Amino acid sequence: MISNKMKEQVQSSSIIRAMFEEGKRLAEIHGAENVFDFSLGNPSVEPPEDVKKAILEILNTESTTKIHGYMNNSGYEDVRATIADSINDKFGTAFGQKNILMTVGAAGGINVILKTLLNPGDEVITFAPFFGEYRNYVNNFEGQLFVVSPNTLDFQPNLEEFKQKITPKTKVIIINSPNNPTGVVYSEETILNMADILREKQKEFGTDIYLFSDEPYRELAYDHVKVPYVTKYYENTIIGYSFSKSLSLPGERIGYLVIPDQAADFENILIAANIANRTLGYVNAPSLFQRVVAKCLNAKVDVETYNKNRELFYNGLLSYGYQCIKPEGAFYLFIKTPLDNDVEFCNLAKQKNILIVPGTAFGCPGYARIAYCVAYKTIENALPGFKALIEDLR
Image (cartoon, rainbow, N blue to C red; front, side):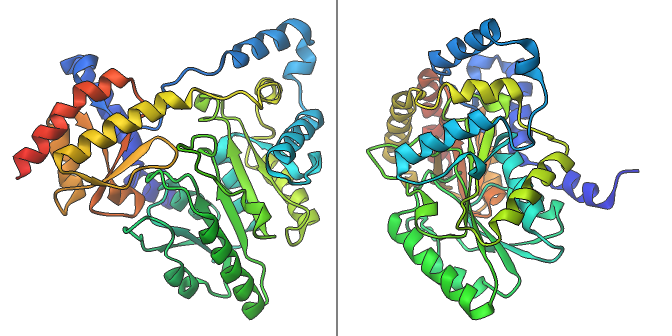
């Protein structure tokens, strides 16, 4: 019989993945061209050509033992040094290879750092709407997740409520910008004010509070919007990055952590994170793709493709009467549902072969997430269904 903890997770299994499976089922019935699946943030843009070139170059020039062998739990030293140099060039930081820990994607990185930092009963705070798996990740290490209510005016974090939720047991704050599911970028003013609150609370309670910035969508920003690099604003910041979206490589599970020297208890965190990487079963990040991403740090996917999708979808939905904040990054629209019951609305959409995810899954009822990382034609073909759906409800 499965464990009680897993029973809970089975019962609350990801609605996003469930919708993805439902999409495959409906496609078998109606044909893939007649099903409009906007449920999963699975990149539709091809990886840059540099990725294929790097794979072939590595396979053709390096020894099999070197490509596929074990290495330091943090990853290859030269890869980590190359990544540190790239970050320094882009953001004016001063990291070295010791500050980089290669991870099995962003999810692997979050789990490594939570295992490193959390004692049972320690508190983690995040801001709604948020990626629902955070709850499971915190639960993995017997922490408690507290959620700050959404600010539905502009979806910047509600800092007044945040300040009230911090206690002596608060250990980690998780932020995600550009945000999944809203596409909002947390402003520099927001980050500065958040940092001030955290310093004030650390002083009040005599504790260390770590800010974890989850950044798989950093490279997907529009209209020249600046995405603040958070280590420059708060000393106890740890960055989690993934190449899943920036290079369209979600299945390769490759990313990294940035752990700055300035973080409290830096040396012990570094040692513990290496051990966590091993004992969680990852051991190390995928060896071939460590080599690949190190050769592709200046490569980018065609963000303009996502931008065209954003403009088409956003303008179309607004013309029909939907309400939505225009996303500044990532590839999601977060619409206010015409019904108060967002789950019911998403079920009605499914009757028109449109698959979207209720905001309840992100801690924000009354909204729905639409992933527009799909073919442009799919959006064109789906828009009449969205129009018919809102007209039916009127």
